[in-house]
Amino acid sequence: MNMKEAGTDIKNTIEIYLKKDEFGDYRIPLVRQRPIFLLGAPGIGKTAVVEQIAQELHLALVSYSMTHHTRQSALGLPFIQQKCYGGVTYDVSEYTMSEIIASVYDAMEESGLREGILFLDEINCVSETLAPAMLQFLQYKVFGRHRVPEGWVIVTAGNPPMYNKSVREFDVVTMDRLKVMEVEPDFDVWKEYALEHGIHNAIVTFLELKKDCFYRMETTGKGRSYVTARGWEDFSQIITLYEENHWKVDEALAGQYLRNDEIVREFCVYYDLYRKYQKDYQVTEILGGNVSQTVLKKAQAADFDERLSLLGLLLEQVRNGMREVVITGEYLQELMPLLRSLKQTQEIPQRLGQLVEAREKLLHSLEAANSLSKVEKTKHRRIIRFLLQTQRSVITESCRKPDSTMEEMERQQSAFEVVKEKFDAEVAGLRESAAGVDGQAASLFAFVEAAFGQGNEMLVLVTELTVDQYSSRYVARYGCEAYQKYSEVLMLDERQNRMREDIKKLEL
Image 1 (spheres, rainbow, N blue to C red):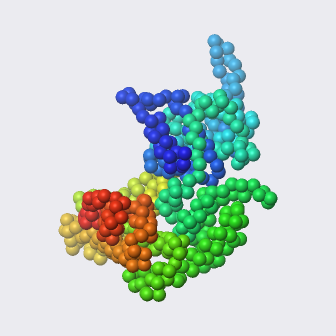
Image 2: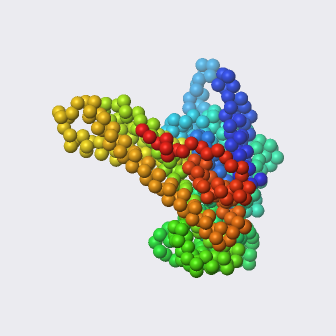
Image 3: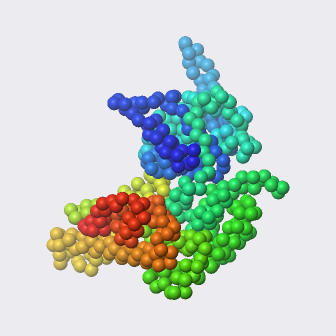
């Protein structure tokens, strides 16, 4: 199975394991909950999918790599304790709490969440002294004398022996206690992840043309050669920062992340072309609706690979704009009820301070649970920043008008007007951004039709906007006439009724 299928299966399994009966007991007792075992090649996203599931299900997440654990750190250290049996006192061996189990309890205390995922990576690379204890753990969920708390689902991962010399193949007795999922790399599935997480567009478009370069493991005369999804993602972040600093991206840099000389050469050749297309095709001008005949003729004469690269360049800016509008809209939707609650508040500055404190506490809890995506974290920080800035503005405004000159009700209304003014400014910015994105989308579709007609390029354009999470959400929430027009023409979808206009609802 691919990682998307595995993710769905893991999510379903966790939801079933956490299902309770009418008395609040788990329908499947902890001892009968088989730990999930993700078995697959390195770097294909096993850890990432578990993190994503924890975020979606709002569960705490504790992650450990088992490669560095000894018997003592996993099971706890022994100590002598005196106990009385039948009137006789004996010295009895006890164990301190396992570091792993203690981390689970720490996460519960800090986050306030009672349910979560305990993710143990490289589970089949444990030391020889720890291996016997793992069998007990997998069946009874116990390390030493301490059990994994109820409500915590165990997910494990490991690589097949061909990829890791440290792997100890599990025997049948061990495997029979696991829910095994064998996963394989799949570019189309990874592409969805790449678009959602902002992987550099040059990488996505290159792999779209060269899918066989996405994942490779082989042995050469120089030793092991490999390219993984993890490598592409890490390389993507470096490319973005190098471009911001105007530094050169070359084979020496690429080779630090992609350990295959042939793929490094192919990508660097493509990357240089990609940068050339950025200059030659005047992407900003095209999306602004100002297409020169020179650019139009160049596009019409280009081969299909070059056309796909050009589409990728144009789509990147439009999708980024749609993404920002969607994220900003969700931030304002969450902020709005907080501000509405100020209408009935006499001391607005103090109440704003309380809202900041509550939001910071929530953010700390989610960070402690390790179940917070980058987008969600940014949203919480934007809310905190807005509340703090608004509090300062309200205080400054009240200082200009001494209390003695105003009735209490008048002062409260004046403070709320400051809040409303700042919020309305944010909404106006969102409207302006949405209008700009809509204009870019219209220019994009107009250019593609003028250059390529309604052929494969138009099909690619509509399909890409359909499958991307943020662009599809943008279209559903705010509409996009150009997309609706061409998606109907190409019969990719039946027209759906638009959802309510979120921006129009943003009124305090």
